[in-house]
Image (cartoon, rainbow, N blue to C red; front, side):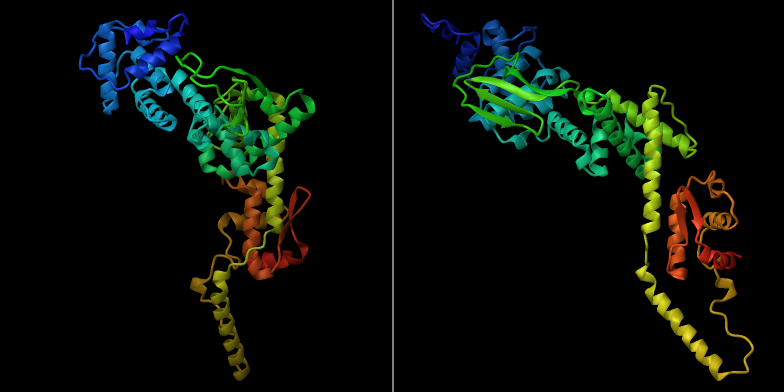
Length: 444
């Protein structure tokens, strides 16, 4: 193996070429001589090791290939990674990728220092050897690109997808928020509306979009495959473009590579974290949530947008409450039975003209608190509206929204009136005049 370094003749071999030829020569070699000393090198190769260090390396490598992965010199680890990047010890490119990926997943738990480069080299390996892009779908880079693509195309996605992307890229841990766990729907809707409004604000008032300002812009730049690794390019790569995601691609032209991607802040974003935390804090104040949250870093224009977003979401809820008509089909049998009883009693009344009283439809003991089946809060809200009082004051301390309570009242009253009894006139909730007197009687 040592002699290979001097077999170049008049042509001087690069260190990467020497490493590759030596590695192929020693591809199946095994030893049983552990090394207990220290070996530290930048860009380690076989040539940079002493004979004892080489024997120690090949002993450790033999154990790794048997599945016995133990902590060793970090420089030994990189030599093993370089071997697989060059296809040494593997039957083909896919076999080398699988071996490298499996080793990386196990050894990163032993020494996280290998994360810095090996993640990138695995990505480069898939691109360079033109492997299936699906191999990268579990990578952090792919997940980041997918989430960022959703944020960029915010106007084309539903709230659920937008919310998931915001949670994935926000430095504020939304899913661990106590308020979110108790009020998930309203938090999701307000956060999404706030983000959309901010995007429109940036498009109107800033040079760059919100996504560009937070994460950077997309452009192409020359790219060095397997940067900082010992890699020997044995064959010239054909011209082609390889797409990893909608936001990242690599192009090879005349053997030179370029990379097109978002160049800027990647990973959890502090600016999105400020937005998510400010929405959380604002909703807690608005709904009188018992556990407050400070959001001092939120600028005034953001606070204004959040306030407008809360009102916009409430307006949508109010409109949905007015439009929504719910018929409980499960009660049809009950209604039919009641109708049969009523019909039979009417017949009895006709046959017994001297009867002074009609039989009651329900036992007094089993009669509900009110004929509309409203709960205590709903009944109090309806009474307040019927007497021109402030319904919102009734809800203080209950944790319930007026729009939600109004929707529930409309649903329960539909069986009696076959119509909506509460409507919004502007921002004011009112009782339809046609049903006011009857409602008062049913609530008494």
